[in-house]
Length: 314
Image (cartoon, rainbow, N blue to C red; front, side, top):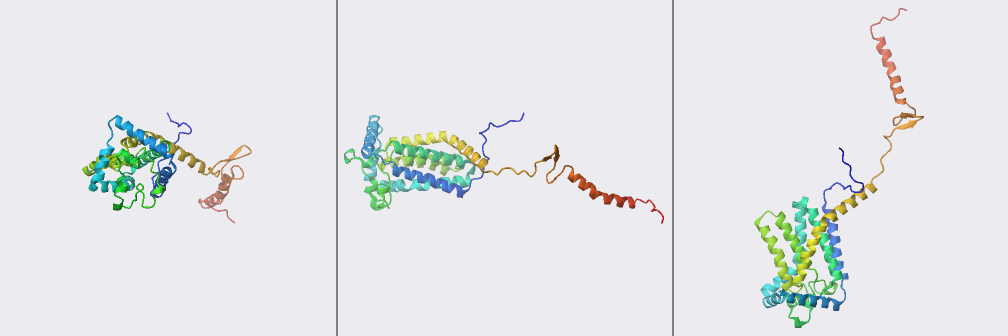
């Protein structure tokens, strides 16, 4: 029995993804991420209150790992300086590199992975907007945290204000600590490397990269432990919603293609004249048959003349 699709649920056929369409999409999402961090500044006093509430909650659960890590990174430059470079740059390098690798080497998995990453990033922006949070490094000195990026600013391109280049610290939202997308993106990269990487080295990197990133964001006093947990949770929500986002995008594409498609031509449709059907290009019924019959008459005469019948005597 033939199956019919329910109207409105048709999905556009999968088309091969092209880099010149993917690159603007990635840049658009990153632009939204950057703009969201800039716009979601919120009230500084509320951000400080949120940061202190997280810190008190962690201490009540004996989860306060930020202080000992931060003291270690501050005391040992051979740990603190690489950690600052890690925090300031790797998420800008590793995440796009994994995307490009998936696009080129694992194209059949790229779209789902990209949609998961983008969906999670948008949920992270919602967190920045609804819950501006002061990172540990911006709390008063009495809480025992040191801003390692300011402490080691002479070693890198950043200044004393966040991880932005010197003189551009005012262009970043320093109160976007919850959730930690550094950790969320690192987790995404780790899962991609674990699932689709074929060597033992990629498996090691898949485990090491997110774990080290979590230690770095706490040791540099840029995030709390619960920020890292929230980054993992955001990636989980994005993973659950990514299939629905993909289906919605397919349906939208199908409707746009249908709306933009030209109407079918009428050249092949029959023409009705006085109750009789004629083919395309005919003015009256049976016009083509009569033309073919008239064209065939000289041939019939020629055959009759050459069939061996003697011509009448003159």
